[in-house]
Length: 69
Image 1 (cartoon, one colour):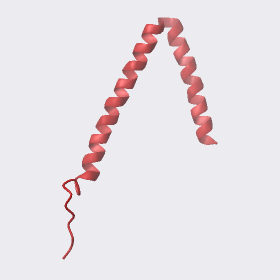
Image 2 (tube, one colour; image 1 turned 45 degrees about the horizontal axis):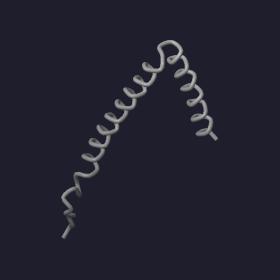
Image 3 (cartoon, rainbow, N blue to C red; image 1 turned 180 degrees about the horizontal axis):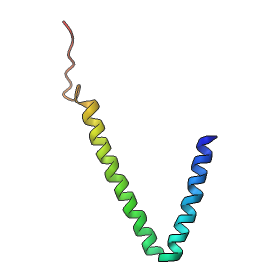
Image 4 (tube, one colour; image 1 turned 90 degrees about the vertical axis):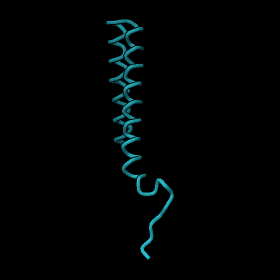
């Protein structure tokens, strides 16, 4: 229920914000700003994947497992 409420409210807010930007600055500015935000999100995601991969994949990245013998 909380997820439905959260995503529903965020969609409504985003629709109003997008409409306000469209009315004030036009469609070109709206879609350019969406493209920029998407690009920033992609770069942020790639950085997080790089950090996460290094931290969790460094022990077994070469395929060798160490055993106590």
